[in-house]
Length: 219
View (cartoon, rainbow, N blue to C red):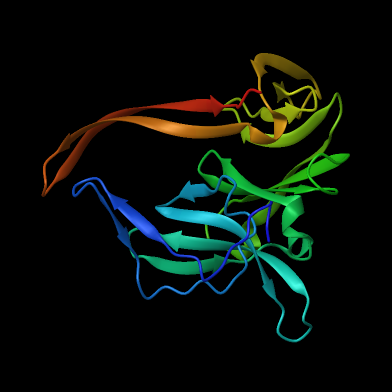
């Protein structure tokens, strides 16, 4: 049982093809890890989807945390190890997202919404030694959950007041953005606007514009 849902059987992966307009089930892929965060936003970079997951340490029987990956192009599952400071942290205290084009894992002092959090960034994709702690942030003024990062380096937080604030790690100042919603359901997604010409055999694209979308669910 997880988050009020009961799951039976092994997870399945399906890929949607824009050319054919249909979903296709991926066969021959076995998911052995427990992906406790699969209902929450994942991180997509380098053509790969990333989840927070847990596994059992063979020689000790303890749970350890890791990043589970799925390559869309190759249809292959993989793993990215977390640094020692995060391996022993329960998955409910971890969250994965992007900072620019790098993977970021946020560690909370306790269940999301505790007194502080740490932001860890993987500076070189797939290289374990490149994990580095970027910020240690005290959760003040009702700040509860990291939902994303701005181009100016500020961190977007949802708050216990159910709004969105922008936090400056250098000055410690936070600014309300005037966006209301349920704190646990805010979601920020970077996007690119593409000019794409479709036919059944080829896809060509032109230039793009970068931006950010913010999602929130109101009661």
